Image (cartoon, rainbow, N blue to C red; front, side, top):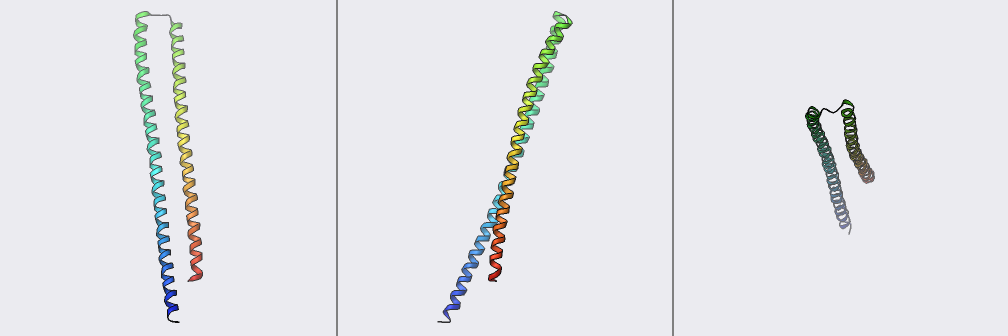
Length: 150
């Protein structure tokens, strides 16, 4: 009977070791997957930001081209009709005010989008930090539990 007891204790210790190894492997996998998700989300946000910046540049370039075409068109009309100077200044002033309003509105919308992306990125980083802290706390607890048994 005495010979059976050490065998069962050794078997239980081996099972606990195997369970501990499996638990640690799962923790490593969770950490690896968490890091991969963090990288992917960060890359996704960066590509979205780059796409928005590119779109902004394209829109701005298109506006400049349109303005240039309008200026050329206005010059050709001015040469043909020769209206007085105050009419030209008034129409130009109204046109510039409208352009200013539209450009300002677009800039405001782009800034809001960028702020939203920055907030999402900060929330994600806080979540990752919280998750890492939780996993490290769990790991520290497991290490402390192992120390008295060794």
